[in-house]
Length: 101
Image (cartoon, rainbow, N blue to C red; front, side, top):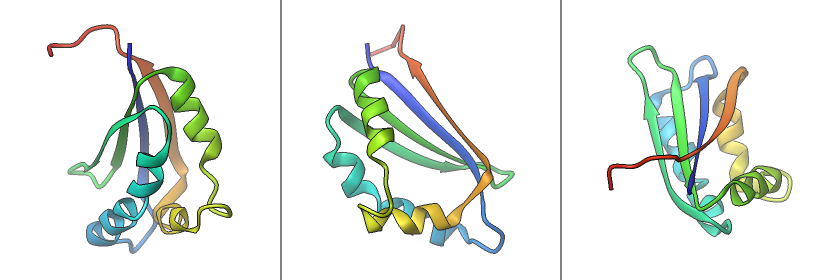
């Protein structure tokens, strides 16, 4: 079964939704290049909290992508890191057990 990765975080002070979306879009190439990548979505809640949801084929692919996430090696990741309030960031991985598809 596939894996859902969620990264929940608040934006750094003064970051607009437009800036956040642009930073997220700037990392799509990195995500899509990772083995096992299926899809990705970005959402901002009414309270301003963000969710970056990535779907992977399996847990090994999800964990490998997490390990590969290195802004020094992939400078395009830097803009995303700059908009994340790291004190609020939480990443989780869930194995899909059921689906309506």
